[in-house]
Image (cartoon, rainbow, N blue to C red; front, side, top):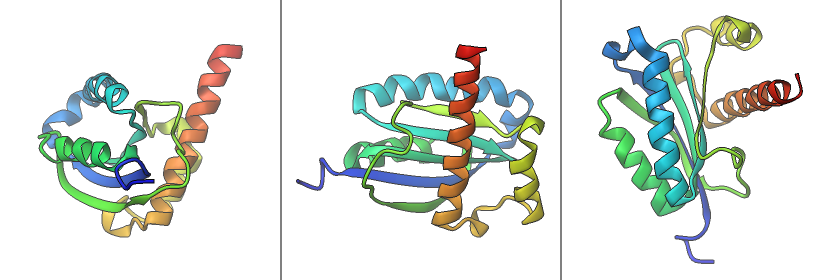
Length: 153
């Protein structure tokens, strides 16, 4: 298979620009809305989470499409201090059901927040590729259960 068709995953962390803090939910909604439109065209999937003033995101798809999307993100003034956590080939999509899904860590996610807080301030320098993926896949599981409960509840 050529490199352009191989599944690629990129994970980054960035600080949220201070000017968006007062309306973070609205801003994240705008990001998700625009990302879904772009990502459907490029067959990208992923998950964006917000925690303690940071974004943590995974993007999956063809390498060129993932890198193009990351390029748009690096130019987006809502992000600064971007840190590339990991990038490379992936065996399977971990967030395949979402062209983009977002979840803010809220008090109802107390168990996850307690673990993050116990390890100190959420900071990209403290994120290894493995710890970032554990956090993102845990959040994806919560998102899936929340969506399922909404459908069955």
